Length: 301
Image: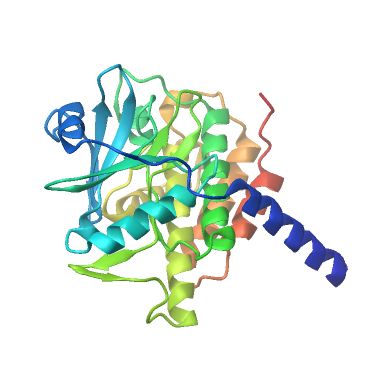
């Protein structure tokens, strides 16, 4: 491609992505008492990790939301409000939109509804309808699109991203939504701004880790197995006896024969490239996204 055309194309893409962002939409301050009641006293746990715990909330009137603790901001009120402002400016089809916040004994972020629960629930709960092959492909492409937006078109780029079946939510149309993203990251009780002491090599490692997480997610979508221990168990299981020699043995039994073998092979190629990025981050997110779009055919609705 001609360098001038490539440059113009990148600027056009940047403008289009920026057009999805904008000023902070109305962000509501929720009553702490109402949030506590809606989460059944913070007992309706959806997932929990080092960043905090997320709860399912059902408010009076039937509104459903995801409520997340902002544990990293327990001692920093100003940083918490900066995070609220930042999240309020993020607008992407595959990011769970911020609806509001609440403060009390906990600092809480209130996000849009999670009508169909987490991806993990659809793998593990026998009462949930198994996801078909098309839906799994759409989730992989959607998550990659959200990562491209966060790393390439958000200002500043977002490196605090956690991706797994536990914290990817599905809306009423089974559209995947990333929920665990943020401007700040924490180490213990110390909160730091991104890039404050991070070299280009360090940022490359962070990008590589995000791509690695995407690779683990793709394995989850293929196998129907939710990962633990940062994906190590799932990677070992896939690479275990005989599975690597017959990829059809990896497929989630819930799919039966209702999948495309060629697309499965291409998806595994992407997963393997992503998994190699943890120690050698040379497969950038935009390339992953383009590769998925090009190699994996998703029929239009």
